Length: 115
Length: 315
Image (tube, rainbow over all chains, first blue to last red; front, side):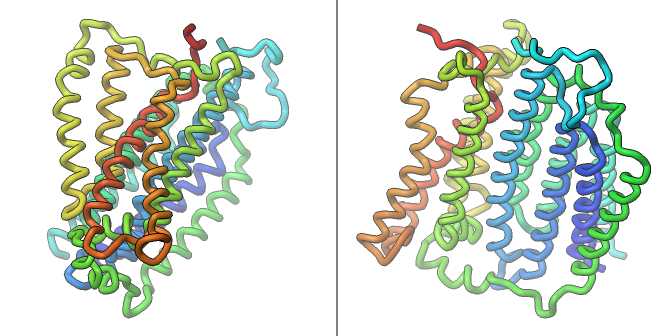
């Protein structure tokens, strides 16, 4: 067992955890959070591959590392857009839910909670 | 077990613990705070994996800027939390999800435990052309020379995300300014920090950009630092977010990708193809692209955190 294997297992566990949270949490914001954990796990796996590919005096293969940097920025873009969508949904309906059925509480549809 | 490996194991457990908290915590706000801590710990893991460039990006963007977006959203969505309790999936659904997650974990763990031998690497290929580029940091070389088309497209993704966020504004606010991030007391500690820190932060940002050619650093990390300084000034209430209809602001947004694309197209005429640099002039070109990109990314990041326009245009 070396450090790369250890962090690889850690990344695999993060992917599992994130997947579970994405499926189980009803709130969209919690799904976004869990999905970011999943992404972190995937990046970590890629980082372990980079570490194993250490060669030519470098600590790791720079190609996967550069792709992870690109990935982190793209993940942020997607997160910002997803959060804006959830906030807009809340503004329009006063709710932040993905459920197709209307909730049991008295509906406030039409008037909206936006300012 | 050596001491270093024991510390690595401790760090890995800490990361998993904070991740568990992020999934399991009750209030969303607590979960988001857990996520920011997770990002910072993950940055330490990246240092341990000899990927300092990734560590800087993770700390600045993965944890910092993403955290700012999520914290603001969690605070605004707090009233919706009691509604969602009744929507939790049943025990069967949770069990199926858990089984699926364990299956995915087992598959990935198998790949980690039985890796390809010898490990595939592009390290020697990346190192071979570093002297020609005159760039000492192989990651910067990959980002802005070998795989620069990825970086170019990623800038476009950032820009598209911002267009997407803006287009969520109601019609009457189109072209207006984003909402005030947080009303701050004008005499508070945050206002003092907003005056003292930005000059230092800007110097640090420019340094990270410059040093990125030879050591860990580069355009993204520098842009995130600059964006953080701008956000600090806005959150402290010292400056309002700008109106999104301003021509100068929009020019700044597209300047980075446009310069990058122009250099790419010039590659057809001068050297031998899209995004190729003339021999001997690669480094100045790369630094110039990075400088413009840094400005554009910093403005895009700041505006993505500020969100869609929420105020009417001023006449």
